[in-house]
Image 1 (cartoon, rainbow, N blue to C red):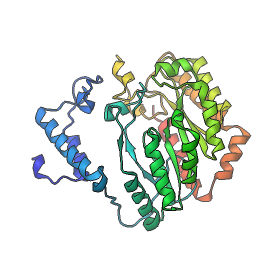
Image 2 (cartoon, rainbow, N blue to C red):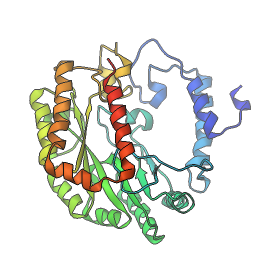
Image 3 (cartoon, rainbow, N blue to C red):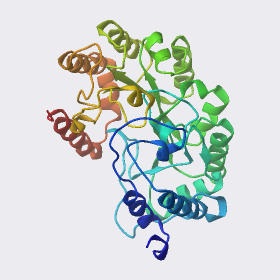
Image 4 (spheres, helix red, strand yellow):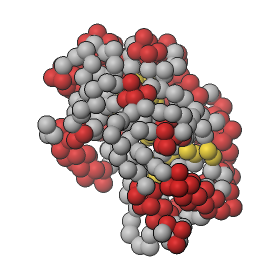
Length: 356
């Protein structure tokens, strides 16, 4: 049945989903990617079909000369990641897939097996140029798991943007590893239009960071942030409240770390045990309320009660944003067109927090 259908991107996703059949238990990885997850049970023939479709899609959509850009006809492009952007319209773009790191709270390893797959930098900038010149896109959000994981690749993308003299700005709101940056890379990123980098710091406790396999020396973060700011690029920090092992003291350290360092923005999420992550696979009780898996409700409690986590989450936002320097900085960068996005984000947040 499957082989009679044409292989294209749209039906590939649907066909893949048809092959995923719920198993009796959750968690567990066998080192075979999604095939190793107990949540999904595939017959050998289904695996063969899925891999066949995947290989053909990769050849068509990811490999050098086979890359194509397909866009819907008409309409204005709006895809802001976050409430604040510099220019409109905005569009997302991906230059790599995967992440070589092994943070235990992240499910990226389940999907990409810690491997990086690169798009051709020329093709990436072809897409940027097409969106810019034919669709009027002025800002791009690089949604890679870690755009700067390979310096050579990041440099080539930036150099090609500069070579074509494209009048754009761009950001990495999905986050990059702060310890992958150096002055040379930051200079060329800034020259090519980069104005914002987000960093997954996660915690202000070195012990918690080590337990999460973060492999990040928190003592080096301040000097790296200064390097980024000196290059003329804004900084955004990502933090997680309620990680395994967290308590009131360690969460307070996380909040203080965010406030005391040179972040222009900060996002505080509540820990959510993502299926496919190492943490999820080790958890014994998996009787969750799946409606709370949204990073703003407490889906899982460790040593703290749900109410305590919620209060500390609110405290983090209040302590970071209710400062004159942060408030005035956000107002200064706010454009009238962004007001609707702020209102939408506020409405979305209220909806998520209302789930019980």
